[in-house]
Length: 93
Image (cartoon, rainbow, N blue to C red; front, side):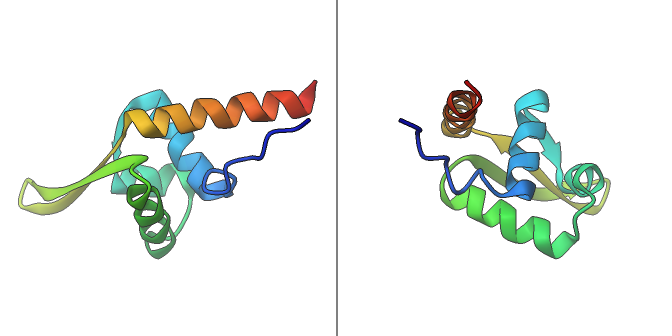
């Protein structure tokens, strides 16, 4: 009757990160920290979980001589988000 909700996306912070990336395509670490109001440590942990499932890619480098971490959503991440939304819609019907 009801589809299972993706447990990886059913976390508030991971869902917030993926939702933001759906709208923006990519973001840097500090941008995600500001938008979600989460701690650096918590964001790092959640990003690693999303990266492990290949929902995002993380690129580390330097920008203006400062460390810079960029996060981009993948096709798999977009598909997982769309499936999650469809499953939620079935709950609302």
